[in-house]
Length: 371
Image (cartoon, rainbow, N blue to C red; front, side, top):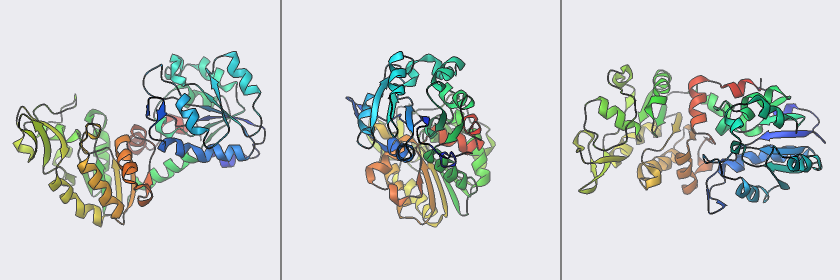
């Protein structure tokens, strides 16, 4: 994979940077700048070497969401100007007026349906603004969008500093040092079965929490009440019998009797599982303490609904452990940020689904286009 540090003289070179800009915004203000902080090393590298920088990216799921709040955050660190719609003559004029070291931020690419549709004409339009392409958007590396997989075929293409570091750190945990522990939370088991099977073979133990645990308990014949479950059935799945598989020994439920802690087989039809209980975290504690490699993606409870206890307690245990740790996933990272534990962990990834895709497949089409 070619990295931007291999690109040579950048003075006056027009560089298109596909950056990780998808950050939470409320009332027009960025709520968590973790991903933007990850984008800064590449942007500063280009700025200091006199490149003319075009920053492109996306934000949110709604087509109408704007990157203007991101502009305000980036302007705290670099000379960044607003470009607006990348398809307009006004954007082209602003791009042509850039001086060395300046940045121009384009509006949310996903406002144009051709981005997600991987449309060649859209990629060609983007390419017209640059002499060189840099992909630093690790959080989007699993998407086959125009700015991710077609644009790098039209210009000399390099990985950004954040993307290169993400790949290097994640590839370390693909060959773990034993004792090793993989902690997997979140939801949507239908997308994670191959990952679980692969890492049960690679790791000494794999723990399954979050909404994923509901699918396992359902497959084992337990009552799951009104808990969130996936569209896929795990009945008969061979990995459920693996001696390496660790599961919650208690769960937090809500129902007519309020919030309670129960054993998995005690859940009633009118109750909903929303977190792992304290006995589960206590069960995990010695595994975390003794591990040399810990990989973690996804919260163990419904974090956004306030069920944070097992996730945050686990984060504290991991921060105190001696293991090399790699952690990712939006709510998992939010917990780590909230507790101020970033520096106590080995590596905190900017990707969630992208991280899982790379762990499962070892690469993606967007990464291959940087080779």
